[in-house]
Length: 135
Image (tube, rainbow, N blue to C red; front, side, top):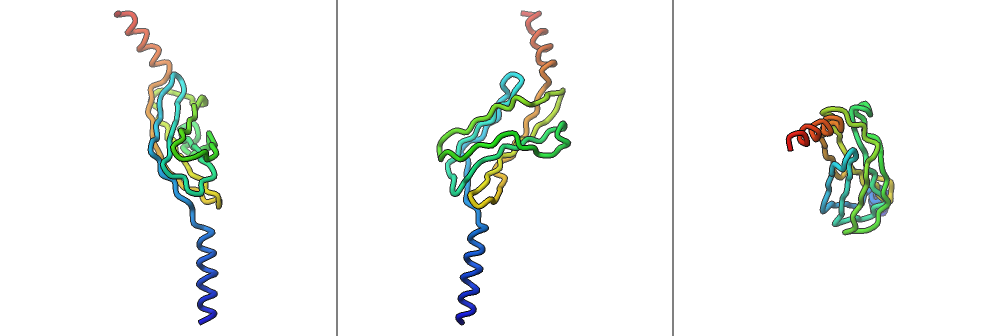
């Protein structure tokens, strides 16, 4: 009986060290700002959170997610914000942004993934020029 109890306690303590906290978002938004993208999010829960890591996947990254920003946890209800100025936009590309939570014990969890389609900057300028000609 004693051996069973100590085995249970060891398993319980070992399992507890691998458990992650919990993150819940109240908002996640990606906006096209000129030639950049602004990614912002707000949390309603950040249990045992160390940091967020914002990842981006594009055709230029061989369709692999690459970390573009790290934000230390700064509290529930506070807005996190990042302007991605390193996006090379070519016509009809799609970007995926993934927000990962990294907990105090090192466990990583994907919290949200969103895709963005855009028209290249050159095409937008051309369209804007055409509209201006007919005004």
